[in-house]
Image (cartoon, rainbow over all chains, first blue to last red; front, side, top):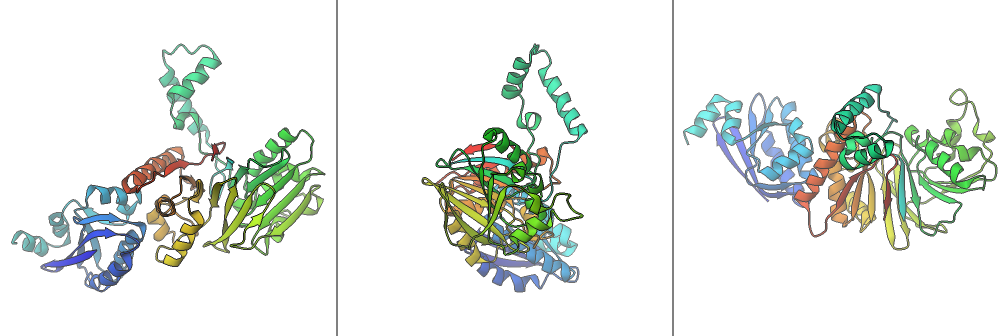
Amino acid sequence: MKLSQRSYADTLVLAPAGRLDHDSCDDFGAELQPLVEQARDGRALVLDLSALEYVSSAGLRLLMLAGKQARTQGGRIMIAAMRPLVAEIFQISRFTMLFEIHPGVREALTAASPQAAAAFDGG
Amino acid sequence: MRVRFWGTRGSLPVALTWRDVRDRLARALVAANGQGLDTLDKAHAFAEQHLGFSLTHTFGGHSSCVELIPPDAGPDEYFVCDMGSGARPFGEHIAARQGGRPATIYVFMSHMHWDHIMGFPFFGPAYVRGNQIRIHGCHEALEHAFRRQQEPPSFPVPFSQLAADIEFIPLAPGEAHELPAVTVTPQLQHHSGDSYGFRFRSRGKSLVYTTDSEHKLDDHAARRRIVEFFRDADLVIFDAMYSLAEAVSVKADWGHSSNVVGVELCQMANARRLALFHHEPANGDDAIERILRETRRLEELTRGVQRLEIIAAYDGLEIEL
């Protein structure tokens, strides 16, 4: 699976694409962990899941660990733009209770910081 | 092979409260309004055909106790996993069926946490001379745990006064143990103090009993081992006590698993049927029904070649493999 990144002002947006399953989670975790370092001291990190096709229990656990790391650093992770299938998996696994979830990246950035939302709107 | 659930609840037995019963009764009365149910037979038929599970059943109930009935079992032979509080009605069943004839009961113990042994002091056949009880398990302290719970001040009847011929038989993880009607293979599981799953095989059918088992999602070797243990099973009775979110966060290392992981492991293993088991005692029937619906939906969303049938075990459920 691929993990692309882009920034809007002070907020990093990560977009995993493909299937986050038992086979791909180790590589994804290794790529994700250093990027979560940026979610600290009040800054948010947005996970844009619009290209994520599937997430397994092992993938969900990685997201949970990332959220936990961000909280210990004084930051936070938000989820945005889930596909219907991934949204159902979040609901069934009760991961909806572990994350702040937004329908789209724009909404997540608005919750993250005014500067990030303005940067997004400014293209 | 047939499976009969005598106890399906995790950690602690639960019962419906009077409010639960009154609410069900009220809902049933409303549903029956105008149906002309003037006899018990008509009312029973209406309940069976028109009222849902949440009005006519309860998941229960007793803590872990699951009977398996291999086709080659003798008429006086019984096979059971764990001695939770479901062992009390199981014992009554044996007594009624035997009518005074001695029985041989083969017990397989996942571990000795209290909810898995608490039914034994109330297991009637243990008090009957002539009965043989063979308690199998992988823990060194197996016999000690059974004896200790009947010592003062916990219970008035010491283990030494039980009239049945009781023997403890050690099993080795990974090694098949042949009995007259069934072959059983234990498997080590991740749980406080260790627990063991059992795979039973009889006349080409396989049953996996795997409760009180936490699955560490970053341990790929353990997952492969478990998948092989579940491989092509006709039924997997699976510890689905928590949601996945609970199992990997606030309840990590509490020794239990989730419906989501149950579906994944069974799909990887090409198992045919998954029984959600060891229900969280804080969950009412509505909550367990919702978990069952969601688990079936997850199976639909992630189905490969073969459909995995999902059920939620309840006290009194019988399944033919």
